[in-house]
Amino acid sequence: MAAYAIIQACGKQFWVEENKFYDFDKLPLDAGDSFSLNKILLVKEQDSVQLGKPFLDTEYRIQATVLRHLAGPKVRVYKMRPKKKTRKTFGSRRKITRILVNSIHKTASKNISCYV
Image (cartoon, rainbow, N blue to C red; front, side):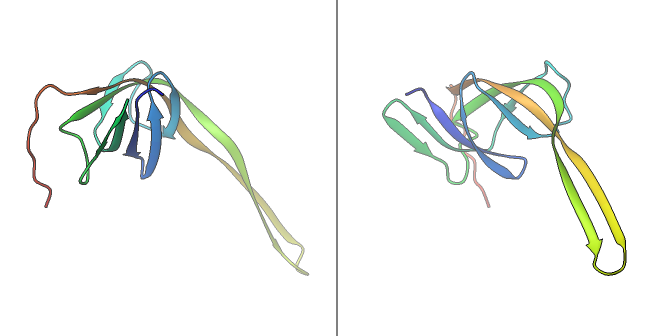
């Protein structure tokens, strides 16, 4: 099995693998921009598992690219007051950003940081 990581992004935790795409909440980036994810909770490579306390941001780096921005599925809300002939329908589509995880790799330097 290929290397995978568990990261924290957009208030949620994601299981990410290389060369796969994921949908995050809308990010303030343009299509084609590259960025790195730094809240890495766990990384598994071959037979070794690294667990962060709380994060592995100094030891590992995850590179990702923004593919495009799109809208998620429509969610409809229907409100009705019985016996009053009052009905309202609302709908919304969540804005999301599709990203592609390019690589999960170990950084060369180890900086020791303290979380308080």
